[in-house]
Structure formats: C-alpha cells, structure tokens
Image (cartoon, rainbow, N blue to C red; front, side, top):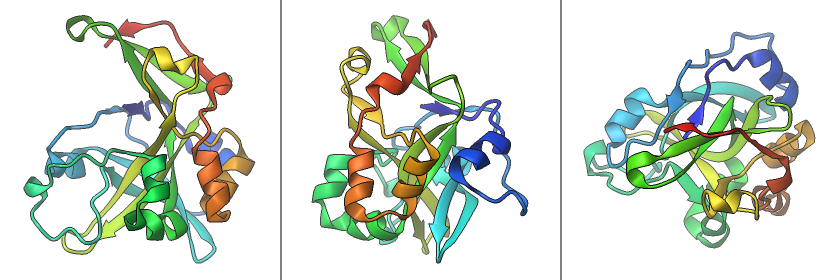
Length: 212
C-alpha cells in the first residue's frame, strides 16, 4: 500500500530529472490499496503516475497498479493471480520478465508507503518514507496489454533489512537518489538488479503507528 496524498511534481521532477515543460498527470490525493482478485476494479480505480524512459525520452504517464501481462487475452475477471508486487528474485530468474527488465522499467512516485503490525482485528499502520520525508521513488516494471488497452505496473520488492523485518520480510525496492533513479531507469540490467535488490534499511524513516 502506498500513498500519493500531498505529492507534488516539483520535488518528484527534481529527483527524477523529469522535464516539467509539458503538462504532467495529476497525483490522486489518496492511498492506493491492492484489491485482491479484482483486476477490473484495480484497473479502473487504482491508477497512479509512473515515470519511464522510451527511445531516450523520459516521460510521466498514468498506469493501473497490478501488472496485466501483454499476452493476457482472457477477461479481466479471470485474472486471479496477484501482480501488485513482484519479487526481484523472481524477475532475476524467470525468463518471462527478461523483456520488461531490459526495456520496461519504471519509477512509481509516492509520498510514502505503509507497513502494518498487530493482530488482524487490531492492525496499526506505520508511515514509511525516505530521509526527511521527501518523495519516495518505488522501482517497478510496466507492461501494455493490447487486448484490454491497459497500461499497468508492478512494484518490485526485495528482502527486508533488520529494522524493517519486524513489519514484513519484504520491502519495496526504492531509488533513494537521482543517480539511483537514473541508473535503474536506463542503466544496464545488472546495475538495475543490484539497485532493486538493496533493502535501503538505514534510509527508511518509520513514523509512529496509526490505526490501520
């Protein structure tokens, strides 16, 4: 779960070296929550700007959270597997991700992401950000499905470091600097895999809990 509440393009553009000369898609003032096994609902509601680079041009566009592979030709209702998050180990090992890893990397700007603790009936959530609370750049992959005419994305996750492990054994892959964002978007595959495999445990700022 991540949030784009209060996010502005000024800070994001500086961190991603994105030109603001052209109009940029607005950020929804909302939390984005995975809607399990409801691909159509996700495609319709959980849209968010992503940043990608194609043919040497860096751009921001809106995509739906929950990767719909280009080869998927069945109805959205028949997609029962979750692709909101994808393990970087899976991307590294599965041939089905090779094309996306080489040509379809993206950054997902967020104000923060959330981690929850406690029993299911009394969950509390912690707001997680980077450094002094600036934008968080989540690393991801995108794909376009021609059958459904949908641009979608998944967020990459890696193994948690010691601090974050009390919340979950996985953590979103983060680009903490402009150089890291550049290297992930347009660097070679090995460099991108290395960056996405880092937990950045020491850089994650975790706020006191709030009711989930």
